[in-house]
Image (cartoon, rainbow, N blue to C red; front, side, top):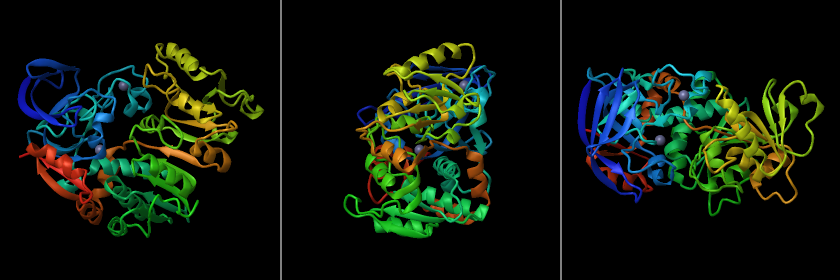
Length: 469
Ligand SMILES: [Zn+2]
Ligand SMILES: [Zn+2]
């Protein structure tokens, strides 16, 4: 058992910082009790280890933290480099699932490779678990990964967003001859360009990278990161060449960005936006990204063999699906909610609740498949699953659903990525390391969090990093 006490700045719902006194009592085997201002704040089970935070990057999630559905105040910060009592440096994957904590569990998510979606997880620096803007963290034992010596600290602090960028790029998996656009090459976008260029080099891939931005200096930076071409967007961006690229990765984090991405892409838009606002005529696209779902046009081929399918449209399923997949039909107005409730009852018997695929007929239905009920944050479709649009209803207003049905556009999404491939790529590519180090334009002491946040919001800052002394 050990006791560690420290003062840390908490982020409050009015977007200010205030100091609180924290205590971490316990051990990896017995679990930790986190106290805040002398009161019990969190009782954590086993599977956490105490690490000292060295540096932590400020990202858009931190700047928008007051819009996310998790309690405040909290010690935030999730792009973390930390060290143990022997000075070994670690980066820390943020999802504290059963799997990451290496605890025995019957959790259906953790035992089927979906641990990043474990419904009981805390998230370091985002949901409850104190983050890297404080001097000490409790890291899930399986989530603290040693940093190879070849990676300097300023590059290591970008491993979390770089892993997310790399995951997006590998999910997208461009084909030979394609043009891939990165919309909004700034904090995350430049890492996406770097990841595309790194992937292309490693796999001898043959695709072109186009950076699309509103500022010329970002296009220049993107070109030094490996973009082949740049496109400057003026005004509202409506004059962009329609469907001029095969795939677009939208890193703008804005509803307007998604709209432009739909115009530009002929085959696929990949979204990483979790701004929480309605976009492209749909309400729950942030939740779609959180659950890493895809949206595409229904074809029989799009439904994998053996899939559990929620068929939510009146039109009967084509004969070739019968026997090949498991179909559950319900086409009423509250169909998605009914089906979710029915499956939830089964879930208690240890089965992963949601469907692999939901087939819908409108943006309203797609939204209701993503979040059938206000009461809980669960989709009808399992994490990584698909929502397929059969045929849009007349009067469909969502430009996204229209593009999906009329021209077969796909929307894919991703949230975070695993660190090992990112560390691998960086450790073996010193040039890439030096490039992403350049993204850290501003550094602050952990006592200057408000200045760090203010600067991170300004136009001349790409990445602000907070360092502990
Ligand atoms: Zn982040
Ligand atoms: Zn779990």
